[in-house]
Image (cartoon, rainbow, N blue to C red; front, side):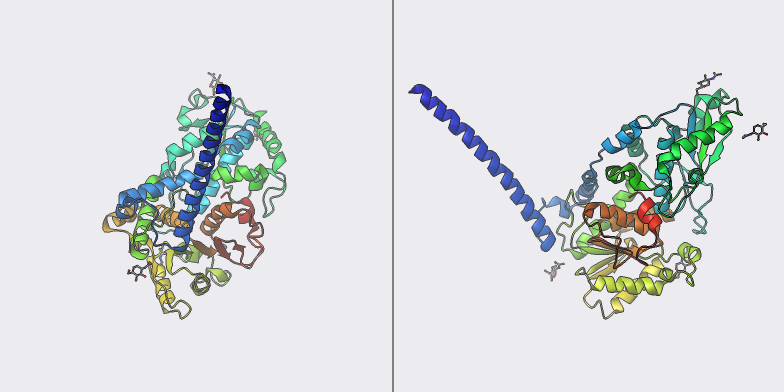
Amino acid sequence: MVRLTLRKLALSLVLATTLLAICRRYAGDLHFTISRFQDNKHPSVNPYPPDITTSKDSFIEAFLSTELALQFDHAAIQSVCASKGWREDVVFTCDYIAGGIGNVRNHLLNCIRYAIEAGGSLVIPGVMRRNQDDISEIDTEDWMDLGYLFDKEWFLEHLSTACPELKLWQSLDDIPASSNGTMSQKLKLLPGSLDSWVPKWGLAHPTSWRAYFDEWLNVFGDNSSAQTYLVGIGRAYLEFPVMYDGEKFVEEFGKILRFRKDARVLAGAVLWELQRKFFNQSSILIPGDRVIANTYFGVHLRTESDAVKAWPDADWKFQRYSIQSSLAIEEISHSTLKVVYIASGNTTEAARFANDAYASPMLSDLAGVVTKHDLLSAEDKKVLDSFTFDQAAMVDFIVMEKSSRFAGIGHSSFAWNVALRRHLLVKKERSFLSGPNLLHDSLSDIWGVTRSYVEYSNCMWP
Ligand SMILES: *[C@@H]1O[C@H](CO)[C@@H](O)[C@H](O)[C@H]1NC(C)=O
Ligand SMILES: *[C@@H]1O[C@H](CO)[C@@H](O)[C@H](O)[C@H]1NC(C)=O
Ligand SMILES: *[C@@H]1O[C@H](CO)[C@@H](O)[C@H](O)[C@H]1NC(C)=O
Ligand SMILES: *[C@@H]1O[C@H](CO)[C@@H](O)[C@H](O)[C@H]1NC(C)=O
């Protein structure tokens, strides 16, 4: 009798606990669904504690924490690194890291990827600073530390976790072979040149690249008393077919490059001002979401003087302001967004676009067309003004990445980089390169001739 009661009691305890667990689970889901729904459909409902909408500092802190959504998963990179044969007698330097941030990111990631493929070690790369007086001059040999654009601590921490086999040197002086005189003169290598063919979609034989490299080095090895080879990797831009390493690797690899903190903070300040100015101070941020839904349209206007010079408008239709602005105005008119943020390194050009957008009969109910210069407080603007052209571009890059919709042009690596990174969030949309635009998915558009620029879609690391 007593035993039976005890068993009943135990059974009901188990039942009650299970029920409670189920309720908790569904309550959690329900809460999640509601807060998402409210924030997406009714931007004025604020699901946050008040201080995120009333204090700039806590807003920016919440913004910085949205990066946690990145959740760096090192496993795919670890397994690629573990699969390579590593050799102690090769040290690489990255000798051509230049251009705008889209270029710089891809140059860096390719250089590192080749060092991994060759199984050598790597001197921590730097970045060339472009000429501020003539921004079309990028190959300046004016070398800056990696921290000029990126978060170096983050880079070191994550690269060494993801690829512990890849030894990193602070500088050439730290390499024993360079101080004891057993290191070779620098051998210059254009990595793509080792393959017999580099079509637009990337190296024809990535699987054989390591063998080609070992063979190439042997030619020097036979003829030299060096014990360690110093190899300078030259220009290697859009040539490594990123899918060679598999989807998971592609998703993770670019995460080793995170923009430096002051640029991220300024991007957070831009969003704070957008929120205050246009969204009645309800929070536009959902920590954990990488894109901010139903708020602003991000337009990348690539008509700065360096672009105008590099792509003469007789040959490059999409370079023209008239084409870019009319495409943007049409695209905005197809969306329900009323706030437009313009990413541009030229305030005159941005103001011209704002005028045209306000004047357009297709956009009669715009709430605002703004840039970082219009939005930032005087204090933040001082920081922005201290930035170089490419440092300021990082602020726009981040704001573009977060935008509800993004659009740009096909000959811009900046635009491709933003759109490809956003595409990782909607990977299921496989036909994103089959029109109506050059790139089109539920988050972004890139204008241009469909199926052109395969070097970007195949060889740019997101
Ligand atoms: C020089 O340093 C290298 C390490 O890179 C070492 O392998 C080599 O034995 C050293 N050679 C001499 C002569 O000390
Ligand atoms: C080998 O060394 C000789 C003499 O220094 C030089 O003439 C020749 O070009 C070198 N060959 C290679 C493949 O580096
Ligand atoms: C903000 O509030 C004002 C006044 O209450 C209202 O007219 C306006 O539509 C609101 N705007 C947004 C974006 O919610
Ligand atoms: C900005 O655009 C104007 C024309 O709108 C041009 O004259 C000027 O050179 C451009 N400057 C830069 C830095 O792009």
